[in-house]
Length: 325
Ligand SMILES: Nc1ncnc2c1ncn2[C@@H]1O[C@H](COP(=O)(O)OP(=O)(O)OP(=O)(O)O)[C@@H](O)[C@H]1O
Ligand SMILES: [Mg+2]
Image (cartoon, rainbow, N blue to C red; front, side):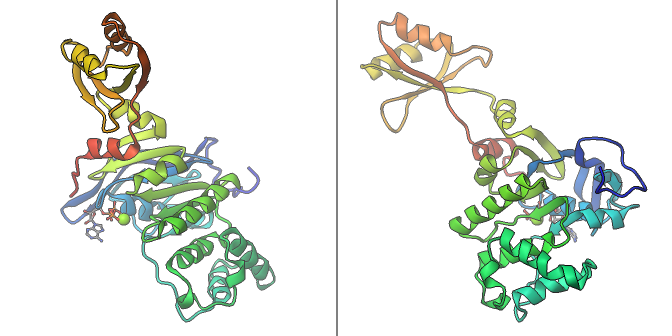
């Protein structure tokens, strides 16, 4: 690719970020335990874990602020330790807490960071206009940062990491502390950035918002990887018992009786709405047709039979059981 340095040519791969056995100790504590992770180019990747799971530690290593105890990590093929300079050029890192210089004007602040990245004075104004437009704050150019709302300050923080046009963005809980509307706005900006070709890793413990936003997720707990893959795969990998929602034309109580007297059925309970029965089968190898035949052979008319959707949050709770360090 023409936009990558001609020296230290990285191997041709679809990976934007890779970690191999990444481990980090703080004294006696193992914050990261042999983490193997691959994020592909163009991913909007959700990095999920409860408090203390190791998200920030991972992102700080990837952004070269922290060195691993053992193991390695590569960003677009560049080693985060031995090629830290190259990594910093292609990566934008938005920490979970960052000081915003409250007495500075928006443009002054961004100009300062653009200068840090050695963007020439002539180009800086255009760059600042571009990033402010991206985060939807063009009209706040002259405003004091301290006078902006929390959501706007977060967006300025994002604008700041965009000034050097990084290909990879690492965002540590960028939506934390935002109200639902500001959160949705932040998510829309991230989708736009993905559309522009950026690879984005976003950490969060707010799972429901990542479920629809991200194409791939990793779940970590106690510094170890529990799952990595498509969002849809989380459910199939972790939900041990697939539940079904069953509807009948009438006589729902009789349908419950029929289901409950069968050994293939582990659970049959009326949903809160009162018009569906939630059914869990005893054997996960068994499929929904057994439910259909119980109902139909019992002389009732089946009107609905669908797998129960489990959202990522439910799955996550089931998977991690709150095990934090
Ligand atoms: N500088 C440090 N010194 C000692 N221990 C640390 C340090 N930074 C992190 N830890 C510990 O390492 C573990 C992982 O912390 P980390 O900040 O990476 O978790 P996290 O997933 O980002 O959590 P949160 O959701 O709370 O931000 C925790 O047990 C934490 O207490
Ligand atoms: Mg953190």
